[in-house]
Length: 402
Image (tube, rainbow, N blue to C red; front, top):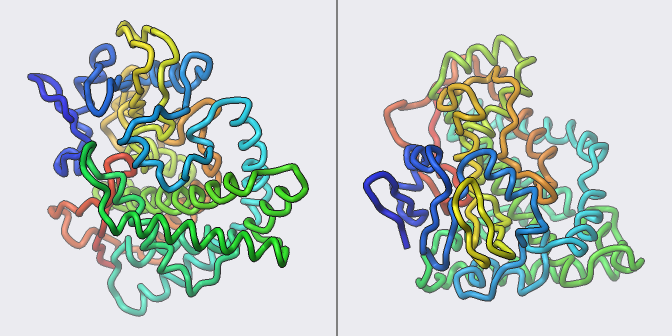
């Protein structure tokens, strides 16, 4: 299940590894990819150029998952329906075309006032209480409220959605060969049942929210099938919520641990764009590309022979700290430029929601810093707990003093 040698330890299901995997990436960045026997032959792709080469080559690597128990458990919620992360062209091209319309830049830009309003309302409550638990007060509710409003979900269901999403993410932390906890199965079933009912409701009564738009496209023969629509909505809720939650949480932790950069960003708000990119590079919300490419044929990556059928762990977080691509990569620098990080992946599977995540993160950080000029970590020596899985890595709580 894990690799342990004199120079390398890699175990995504080890709690200590999940808390701080970065020291373990250094041996991977110093040489060609390693192949481990985890739940199947797995190549660890860590160096920046190797990662880009794999992610951009859908001719030699497929995103379609093999029929093995561990991966079946991880993607069970989708019941075999294709999602962007698990299909190749031409199916991927069709799905991506529909999804891209929903996340077009003009649509996302129109959401900025509402995101600012939600953020301000959440921070009003923080100011009234005089204490700030970043995850519970901001990082968890903001992305959930934004994506739920896009989908057309009423506010009274937000808490249920959050618990269901947390259940799915917890399932990603189950080691190979171990049974999926019953609460994960319950959460997955509840999500599917809820959205199946919402789709049927839009079929009877059309709406202009995102679910209604997808259903309308489906009925006009220009969109997704019923199963594809359901799988897409479930994935959208999970990815659109969890990744942005982790972006905000990881970003506030990085700023809290680097108070000089927090002060600089407060004094120079025009740096917010580069600051968000550096947060994404320095501690990305997704550690390993969710596409999990598989070699279609025998390949050679960076000097390592990769057998056909091997699965790739393209470690985005390691590539983002490759000294061959980034100067002084272990240093957090909100002014870093250029910053061609891989936090959103690369190639045809580049994250469709990247623009929305950047917008939400930038708004959250800017309003927090403007509202609380004396913001500091409550205890810089305390290691915050991590929740969920290594693959979608984020902190569970973070106390700050306002």
